[in-house]
Length: 239
Image (cartoon, rainbow, N blue to C red; front, side):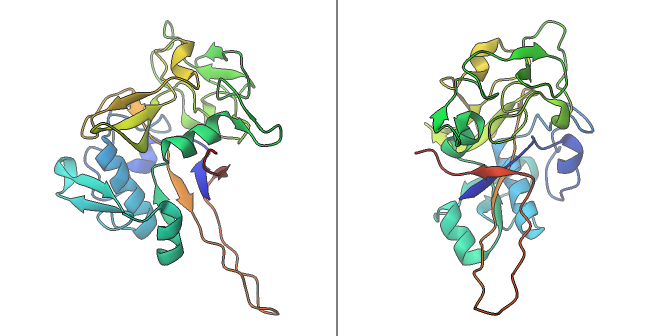
């Protein structure tokens, strides 16, 4: 099972990673990273996994803006079982479940704020049932930790603010989910998806990461091995 980051990747977080071209230059500080290609988002996942943007779950050809990333042939779970903790871009199913599924009730909602009613549009904040979207006076994304109410899985900003890359191939493109601040509510709706050239960059497109930290079962009477997950909530694949 995978764990999805509770918030989008912030611009200043990605700027710390060596080997990431441009590091998403549209926004700054704690605003979401954007203007970053799918390939460079994959480089960042590698950097989180190994400390080296060119080594990890994604095989990389080329460098910088010319880099091309290809996911490992192993599934995320199998790769983690063989290699240890791994960071990656979520599949569309993983992303979808974290956004729309309520495990307590066993149902999916239409919007990523735990509701079948469109969230209230805001420019910033964490009030339940809100999201950063709607255009108009909203001209820049909110900080990643102020990007609306939580999903039932306690992730923030999966609706609005900026579109989010996922790993799923759609034709020759990679998937986008969640909408952005300039959308009306349909962009946040569970049935709406887009795709985009993985080498493309746009100020409305960012990403969040997922991770798997294998659990090691200790021998009887041995010490418990503690593992520290990244910020977020368990998001098993959508059934």
